[in-house]
Length: 356
Ligand SMILES: [Zn+2]
Ligand SMILES: [Zn+2]
Ligand SMILES: [Zn+2]
Image 1 (cartoon, rainbow, N blue to C red):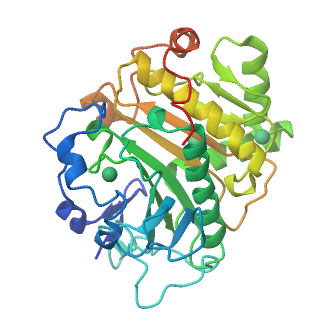
Image 2: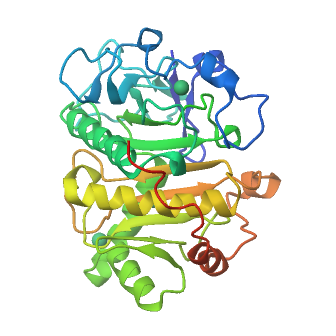
């Protein structure tokens, strides 16, 4: 069973999940780029229609006609991860309001707990495509609709505190299935990066009575230097202190702290802008491996003034080496100003590949 362990020195939690090693290594020997779907991937793909019995039963699906959630006429399908890094079947799990992970103390340095949570896979489309740029705008909107629905359902489970949604595209970004999919991991802890964002944003708000993300969006849109693209409701930009070359964030222009509050109109707008912005990265860098993550507020403080949900996309062009892992400090060889400048002009192939 996966286990959460706390480092007694720097108070850092890790998930030890040996069951994950059993995952199929479908892409282990493939190239780092997702590029075009492979024939081998197609023949053995449990995410393609007709192979629903090879995944655990669906917990959610969008389809033309409401019927069996495990039938093959779906547009998006959400299934529990077959090799979860978090597990929901622990003997008893306290409410998120009372859960306090054990701290290291004189009796034992080594604090551990079952890695409790929910780990789901969102199969974005029945088509065997491998990158976001290959989706239609409608397909990406369907996928984001499923994310919103799952966040909305899971927030009512009082044992869960936070959920992170992410995508691994390409082997170098951690994908083990080439058929495009997202993952959702909800647990009783707020992940360290989100916790650091929440703390920093709260500090800024306490001093300036302003959301730091709203302020950043105002400043970036005014200068335009690091803006890649924008619509009336969203902006795609390369953040000032980008950790990765061509790192890009996509944010709602109006203040919104949790992704679950997005309405259908904005969701369609987001799907168009984000798909187009990611397609710029894919065509400029010739289908690099990348990760996409949605950062949103914890389930017990959804609507807050100081935090602003956002999507982060980071191409995996370089391998973190000794300095990065040893110091916790990223080295980025491409300035965000240069990245935004070239991404703005690189609009080839970023038209939606057409409607279904
Ligand atoms: Zn497939
Ligand atoms: Zn804001
Ligand atoms: Zn973030």
